[in-house]
Amino acid sequence: MGKVYLVGAGPGDVKLITVRGLDLIKKADVIIYDHLASRELLNFANGKAEVIYVGKQASKHELPQDEINSLLVRKALEKDIVVRLKGGDPFIFGRGGEEVEVLYERGIDFEIVPGVTSAISVPAYAGIPLTHRDYASSVAFITGHEDASKTESTIRWEPLAKGPDTLVFLMGIGNLKYIKEKLIEGGRNPDTPSSIIQWGTTPEQRTITGALKDIDIKAKEAGVKPPGIFVVGDVVKLRDKLKWFEKKPLFGKKIAVTRPKDQSFRLAELLTDKGGKVIYIPTIEIEPITPNKRLLDAIEGLHKYYSIIFTSVNGVSIFLENLYNSERDLRSLSGIKIIPIGEATATLLKSRGILPDIIPERFISEGIIDAIKDLDIKGKRFLLPRAEEARDVIVDFIEKKGGICDVIPIYRTKVPESTQRLEEAPDLITFTSSSTVTNFLQIYGKDRISGSYVASIGPITSETLKKNGIHVDIEAKRYDIVGLVDAIEAFFTEKGRTIH
Image 1 (tube, rainbow, N blue to C red):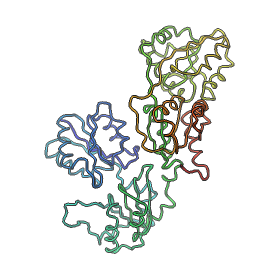
Image 2 (image 1 turned 30 degrees about the vertical axis):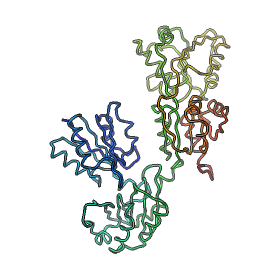
Image 3 (image 1 turned 90 degrees about the vertical axis):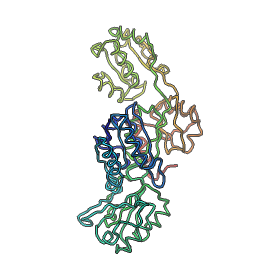
Image 4 (image 1 turned 90 degrees about the horizontal axis):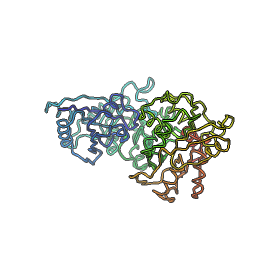
């Protein structure tokens, strides 16, 4: 018999998962998740984990609660580690107590991993402190959606309306009019500041504020739908001063990332930190060329080389993998000048215990030429492990200077076997190589770029875009991921800049 872990997934922002919760997601044999648990957390699951969606959203249950309970029991009898991933905190209006009762009755071991509840985190992301020395010394959390089987409400509306300074209703968007009327009827001032926060802590967050007496009308006019938090109290007045999340430079912008998903996390992290919503549409896959006798021969004769030039992180990873598989280690690189094309490639080398000898100022092939032009190249042998299709400007320069350059293709880029559907035009599409441009056009067609801004990592990628008749709105001045994000931020923070 296995063990069931009820894990609070947090309110929506994937980074608000607890360390314990993330550790269990990585170890889980089965993950059973609901509508409010961020799907991005599933990216951390191991490849063998069984992932089951059970829905649980307002007025629409993919699986009734009784069946979810039975599923937990059944999986606990089959697997070792069962993670029940629940939005927010399992014990704050999450029916976690009911699920644990069933496990207890069946003699199944369980553990509760608390999560960051939306009751406190969503108002915080909207700039609303639930308590404040000048405004609120007490706070109450109330369900806005009671059990439909109840014959009458168990909420004591009059003491609630006259008691706690701040009221936080969860799952109450569909019952706003009723909640408002009950509070005013119970004695709450109709002019009390109120706020509705939809999809809090995510780039889709929307915040509506107004007086209690007409907050439901404002919500209806704004088209607010669940999920959302309803806050009532004078602390709402502080939002104008304290709101921070919605001021992020890329807040709410939908930004498509076209590089391989396993290489997109750094770019996605930087964009998310700026408030953007990342849409993954990988347009290339990296495929190592195997078997590769030429590469193995080069590794066998590394002592012949004056320098190794790495033009991508893929080149570093695949080269080192082959080096180690040949029963050699970093000592084989002693005395060889290591030259990466840019900061990202240099960072990977450093993480693997290799300090680059030269890092170009410009992170393109021409930058490498600038970096090595003063070296005594004549008669020296260079190794260039790279993609199957690439420009030959480095090779031409070395050979022109009397050097020898062994170009060994060690990987190729290809169109992914399965591709993501692009339901709507993103606000911005990022391209990080010419291959991402070519493959995007092959998969989606040029028309899918219409209505979106286009961002390029550098002049080579921009040239490919322009050759295909695509206008480049943003080009990074520093030709790497950090430079690309900086350029995107600058573009959207210009005065008057809006999305299409």
